[in-house]
Amino acid sequence: MRQAARSKRRQKRRTQRILVLAAFVVAAVLLVVCIVMVFSSIFGGDKKDPSSTPPASAVSASQPDSVPQQVPGGTPAAADPTAWNLILINKQKPMADGFSPETVSVSELGHQFDARAADAIKQMVADCNAVEGHTLSIISAYRGPVTQNKKNTDLVAIFKSQGNTDAEAQQKADEVEPAYGYSDHQTGLGVDFVTGGGTETVQAFADTPEYQWLTQHAAEYGFVLRFPYEKASITGISYQPYHWRYVGAEDAAAMTGAGICLEEYLRETNGATGASQPEAGSQADSGGSSTSQEQLG
Image (cartoon, rainbow, N blue to C red):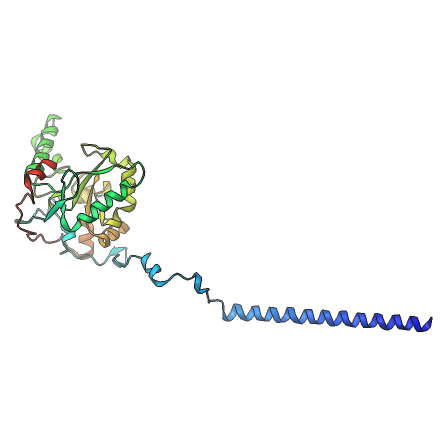
């Protein structure tokens, strides 16, 4: 009996030693794991899985390299006042003698637009109309003297019929449709839009989904809203949500980002009043096929 009892005690002690040894081994393993984790976090924390890192080309594609750098105060710093796409024509800077943009048709109705920006406007209209329910179309682009002056004189007559004096009627007309040589339409880079087959430009265009699309995407194609509501005192033209102007992708991005109009952009970036207006070709001052263009304004 005594021998059996001693044997049980020895077996119990062996079991206890085995359990203690096992516990020690487990503790040692856990300690090693903790040490490895600590060192990994210290020396390997900045490493990334190569498969999760986008290629350099993908990163650069999402960051347009054409956007001008910003100087303190948010003013773009890279506008070129001599660039053809930044030509400025307004009441303070009338069209230069002999200026005539080379234009091509950009719509089924033959509306004319500067040939260098023709692809951009056609692509923008096509992409907008690719959205279900959108029906953006051009109602007016480049205008020659007959069309532009008729727009102005018709408005003068309307304002006079409302009781305005000759001078008041002329001033109000000039704030909507200036006479030939003072309108953005003479640059060959300005365009008026309508929706749903409309035949007249209206401020209600601002309430359309097409207008909302333009506010979100036009700069990608190089276009900006030429006459914003809050800039009327600077542009000298009343709010025209339907009138958009091609200035090029990089300048459109800068102007849109800074919330400024063309006059401000040229003045603030270079202290300039606008691009020079060299004669752009051998076309007549009405620009290209004058008969069809005069009928399309």
